[in-house]
Image (tube, rainbow, N blue to C red):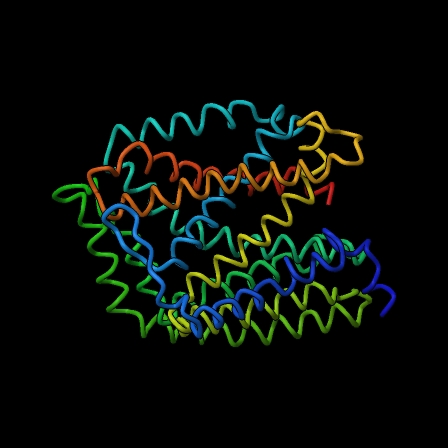
Length: 356
């Protein structure tokens, strides 16, 4: 068993990078949140135009937008993937962008969709990584699949619905510019009121469903193990670290850093995965394929492009908060990028299921 765990074959990006950037990334993010809370960074402010906010808030916004853009390296930057879905990769973002520009109602609805889809997407990223570790342990990818899907939804979405950070998410569905009028805005005003009224009910429901499911999950894998299933230590460590971090942060909004902590480790994991899966392809696209020295320039280009979009997206987001009248083309661009990230990434995982 010890030899299996130390074998590079079971890891995605290698033993060190997997442990730091994937498996224990949630605990690293939690530690970073504690450091921010206990240091002057907790109070350090930065001003963008007329809007002032904490430096850590601006950083995490830039990091989020940078990781959202990475999906285009997997879709448009990979010829093998792009050739399979040219219409989806070209027409869909253009049509969505034009639709959002044409209607405030559509723009607001897509923004709401992005917030909701983000939660599901984050759950499925952890689920997908866990299934890769299972497959590399030699298991049938279909065994335990539904159990893992349910657990990841519970560990990520459950603490949001039952915790103190519920209103943080609910407030995001209320557009603060370009807002629909009259009866169209009823939905956006009704959602926060409904959430506040029934939060206790949601908490009890999550506990009533979650505790029996956790017991069933453990029992099911115990039974699978007895029948010869090799439970992946890496997957278990990933789920435990994610679950502990999610419950502690979303459930209690630890130090007021829940949003920072959860988004930091999710984005970090995605950077590691995309670099591992697309690094060689990007090196070839940059004309550096086969060159021993080409890996570093490719990595710098990969990080530089993502960082440039992330900084632009973060600054634009803060300017939109401060100046609602600017909430137009730039808002539509960053929202389209977010939606494409969630959508593209989901089916790219499916396309590559056999490869991983």
